Image (cartoon, rainbow, N blue to C red; front, side):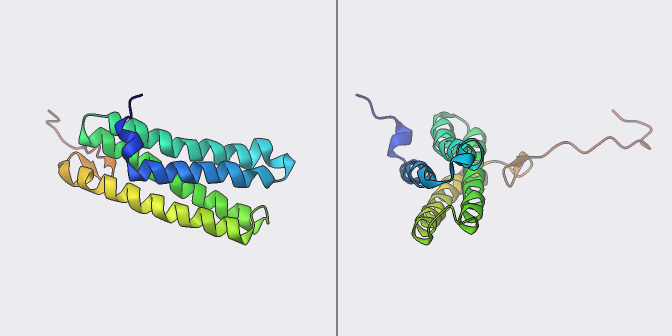
Length: 145
């Protein structure tokens, strides 16, 4: 069986650990959260590994960086949901710290993947992962073209 390049990425491997941990810890959440916080956390967790995998298959640095940026954002979203879950007493301190440690690792690893890609794209094409739009037309310009 073939091993794909994303499976070899340390960031993807750690994100998969985070994903599995989220599935494990949310099993103990209140039943009324199954379609709320539990579903959202699972959806976000799976999106991290999915975006890392999809980004690894992209050809351009700009495309790769965009998918890694989305994965990073999803990791931060998991952190936010983890904090809320802990404060609602849905997570034990031990599980909170485990998830938080994995989030720290995944954020660092994604940043390391993304930084050289963003640095390689010209500043006029991308700024902090957000494509720059052309300036709006000047309504006082008599010769717009």
